[in-house]
Length: 638
Image (cartoon, rainbow, N blue to C red; front, side):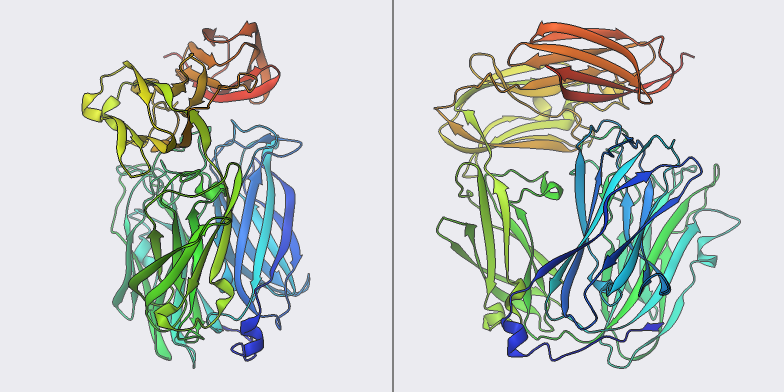
């Protein structure tokens, strides 16, 4: 156990409570080039100057951005990368070696220069160590050639203010890879209970767990592709039970150049894992904490591994009896992590969190788009400390054309004054949805599994204007519908119950489908992404004044099949004539170029017999601009 010497002042003073929180940024990695290495793991350290121990910190969020590197190709595979807090106090400081973040990299082969994606995770629990001079190390496990990699940025967003609880100490728990299903080395013989002493003054033990499964054995495909449960017990009492499985078809980062849609063992490609956080009330004294995995024995290809890092934090009681915060605004919000939900026309929703010792029963929520009259909602519930609630407000979002700001404010928690008002208000920016005509043509080409799909057009009263239901769909059928709507806000939703979209390169047997919108003159005005996992949504404002702007290019592409032995076909639909260049590369080397002058729509075939087996990328340039990049995988003829 490690005790924390933490500077304390009377945070409840009127001076501190009256202050609005300041937000500071500490950047330890600024587009650091992360280079893959065939030999395996490679560290990328960086230093940052964090607030001193005397500075009150309310919250710390670690933002991690991966982008296409300036001098390399983007890395291809879904690697398990770790972010460590290595040292505090300069180069001669004591080693700490706490894992504070876990990145599962995306399949990046289809991303061009200039691409990037940002994730975030709360690391406030490590605030006592994110002080003064700190070394943060990103460990990349990529074993590809040194010609590929990432541009990495790690940005710590530090919000000032009184701490919610006082940190008293930390106890490292299970921190290694554990073999799973191995009859000669059973996990229960290594994943042993931890005995620890709860420090004087402790009221809450917080267990923070990062846990991912890897390997591919038989019969269940553990640990990457098997669901299994995990129990957490304190003093032989169950305090947490969960199935270690994650739905990847709703990943905000899509499409990717690999098997991104396949559900996995508590992780997905292209994701900064959010740790499990379990708070349990405790009394000072001796305790035993145990982590138990579902019993399992593999029979062949025994290689499953459970990669776990976990820590127990000792905390005082909450500093305030009544304390509520706006945790997140999910809708409306233009941040990448919420792109599955936005842009939106209806139903703003946000998350509130109870940070007080008293259960939160009521709070007044004032919300709305800046520049429009605010509305009020009276929430009722029963939230324990650190628990959250999602609030969904039915109705249409108010907005002006272009960029908007949206604000949520919380007041009168449990009918009283909040203990600290600094996190009671949150503002996001968002863009208004696209403008579409009131009369348009919807074309839906089904694939070989139409019973997985559904199309719904929803109006502002949550009424269904149009639908295509699974039971009424036939395979490989083009459905063309002329749709007329009144002026107003709408959301057009495509869903896929199997989670593999209308087309997925690794499943050519499912066929190739698409969903596209045209104006009444036949101009393409919107194309849904076929490789969309669980589906995709288009929010739009219908206007009778809509006129298609053919000076602004719109394109729809299809590439099928993508798992090939001989050849493939590229389909192109657009709203204007363009000069097209198709470039085919293997491992970054250009093998073929095909030029097509002045084309608008067409179907083009490519013989790939002379190309080597493996990953192939087909990229389409329209008038010199890259508009589509598709991954193919060529198999050898048997």
